[in-house]
Length: 85
Image (cartoon, rainbow, N blue to C red; front, side, top):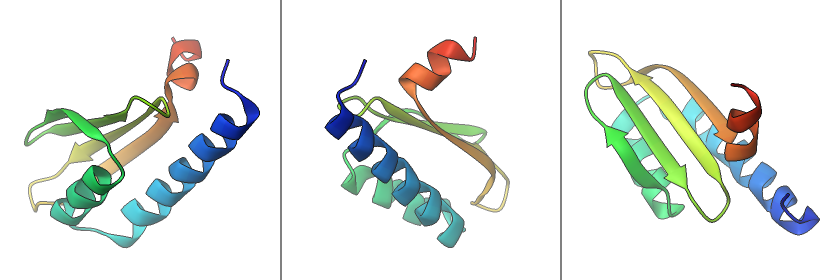
């Protein structure tokens, strides 16, 4: 289990990413912002993009559309993903 400080940091970053994605319809901008937050691309292709931040145990899933934007997204902590199975 994550410590309280790390959990608060994780939640803060997840909120920041949520706001960022909603305010940036262009995926190229989102990609650069994720890189600046030390996210690593696990998959980044025409259909789907998956970015992870291993230190905070966060992943971002973006379903891409043809216009260079995204059709939907999911932001979650690894712990949330583990319990969703």
